[in-house]
Image 1 (cartoon, protein in one colour):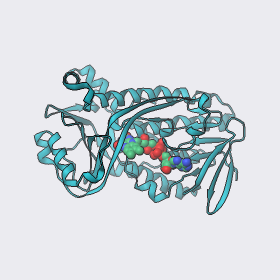
Image 2 (cartoon, protein in one colour):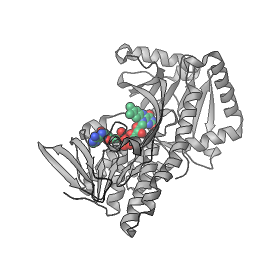
Image 3 (cartoon, protein in one colour):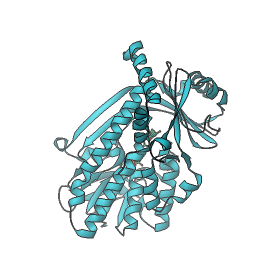
Image 4 (cartoon, protein in one colour):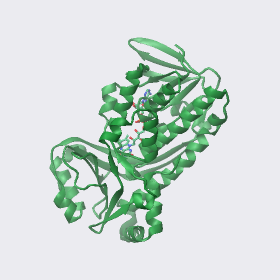
Length: 390
Ligand SMILES: Cc1cc2nc3c(=O)[nH]c(=O)nc-3n(C[C@H](O)[C@H](O)[C@H](O)COP(=O)(O)OP(=O)(O)OC[C@H]3O[C@@H](n4cnc5c(N)ncnc54)[C@H](O)[C@@H]3O)c2cc1C
């Protein structure tokens, strides 16, 4: 089999890239090692920057997002048990974010791909990438009991943090930067109305909490927890009781509890791999970088990478030139490091760090007081939260 672009991974990066290439008449296949149902069942991000929404519109998959997504013009920061609103739109000349689950984005992209008749191989085993330092890269995999090989012009490594593409690059060709945080997020999804109209980020002496949502009837809550915490030890009741303790009185009063649909613990990590292009292998999304979810940037960075990558590939097939592909890595990394910085800073500002002690907490509160009272500080926050331009 021969295609122009072989995409590894059917997460948001791979599916969105596949759709944009399809619309440009570029032939691509997607290889995914999990089943379609497994990919759709993963509960992950839910806040889209305007740039990601615009890109999904360009990909022709924005209609359900606009019908069902919740447009948010602000967020709330809670510390010392008092909530303070940051008016994102007022501070950024009208920009906003849209709450629409990653599972919904994934479903819309999968449906569009199926409607276009474009090929995705789910449950592809033992995917491996070869010869990307030459002109004729190859991808090999096993499926339906047989071994397969695809010859292509380019390989797009959209296979997430644990994928095969980044690991296939010779160690001397890649530099990685990493910070692992000494805590995780315990998340709970429930079919209950959210306790507020906007997201509430909570700095509390018992640990960070986040009140988020996926719709007007589906809530997503998070608690900072120890890394060795066992999910089995967290009954729904224990989760709701702990969340209520960390909220301000009005939010605690408004909290509607119910049985969890999903509960999981995610570690927090900052990670960047440089560069993102190795000959004819190009990394995008979590394959190249990870942010702690505090700033809601993971999915949005995947979208901006795909914007740059699709633009570069479309330019290459239109002109035969490599200028955009040569610039791909630097363009992505400039924006990625901005989002890495913001996500790290928000994580530092809002979580309990046991090694920082009482002094660290006083500094956090001082910074939060400045953030809500200084228009300059609020504006810097809002600009980053709604997303820096592509
Ligand atoms: C547990 C968790 C919770 C998260 N929560 C949030 C959040 O609350 N807010 C936020 O903004 N972001 C969150 N994120 C980050 C966000 O979900 C990611 O940034 C986003 O999914 C990136 O998309 P991607 O397509 O690059 O990678 P992925 O979504 O990871 O997709 C990669 C795909 O490649 C496939 N794959 C892997 N290895 C192979 C292989 N060898 N061969 C073929 N296919 C392969 C995987 O199965 C997967 O489908 C979370 C991430 C995780 C892991």
